[in-house]
Length: 430
Ligand code: ADP
Image 1 (cartoon, rainbow, N blue to C red):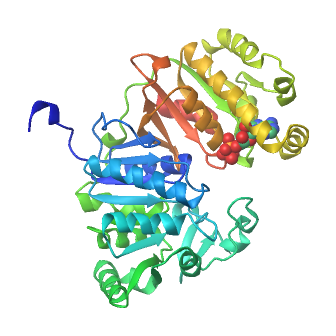
Image 2: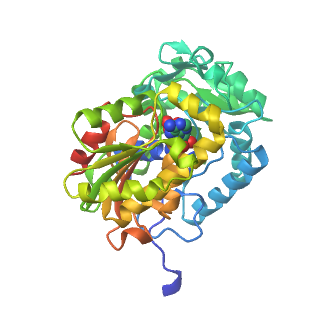
Image 3: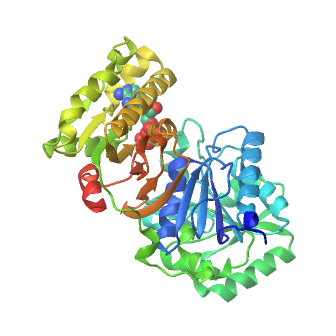
């Protein structure tokens, strides 16, 4: 091999996630199981520039038209294979968010074709977050998926908890089940069941899992399977197949320094409690009034001027988070999408301004909000670090704005995290 062809060690697990905060959730589980993980925002255009055991390519393909989701997923696959990935993990939501047409089924099948494999599994089970699969039926906490509120989701209403049926409607291949009795017997029984299903011409199997022990029994049976499709739960049982064991070195990040800030555009119940807890802790907080932004007031300049002298003393929080009545009033006047996009732009400009003021530890709350902020900061890759709360790790990224040391950031999706998340996050990093 010539010098120019020399590359970093090949990655082991290549992951494709159908949304942004879901990608971080998967990465977090892999790190906890001992893998060094990099998350890429979209399909990278360059080879990987750091050492990692796994890479998670974060797409926003969950509700795209099927053809676009397929194209993006194949592009991610081809980049991951070029980095040497031995196994591919297609990650979707633990509530199996999809429409009657996809995108879970079509993306899975096109990945199977590209990998030239005739069998894969599908399970969104994530017992740590109370998602369990029993007899092929998905439970969210104590209730079936179709009674969990997900039946009313605006984009991906889930009206059937029987995942074998749901997936079959999206697939050409026949879909079967590996049930809890087989999973309970462990690797050999699971492998026998897979052989049996393949002999029957079945190409995909939903797998029951009602505990982490089930996922740990499933893991070894997936060794060598070219494609695994799942929520983030299955990830806890895979690193062992590559000889990797849990280790705190997997989550090591460069030392944190610099000023601290929280930017929150999530209006989820958990975030609203976290905003309140930050204020009650006596820390400086400033809210954004959507109507002022809409009226053309330069809120970004005002907020940054307010933050500048305070940042040297304590973390500051800037938020548009609000209770549902206030959000509805804003949406009624400005339109749901227009209000969302306007506030995402505003908060992203504020996040950028804060980093220009020296913030190097940044907590971002809200899936869409953090997506907009990460884009404004021109962040393409993040190394995944220690977990703050389930599904939410600290990360480290390079950004032109942050200079040579880069910055630490965490992307908290709406309903994740304990009430004191915004306060304890900085302590965790210290
Ligand atoms: P979550 O992860 O909680 O769903 P997101 O950031 O994904 O949070 O979504 C929240 C959406 O609500 C964003 O588009 C954001 O701009 C918008 N938003 C934030 N604050 C308000 C508000 N006060 N009124 C109306 N919409 C808001």
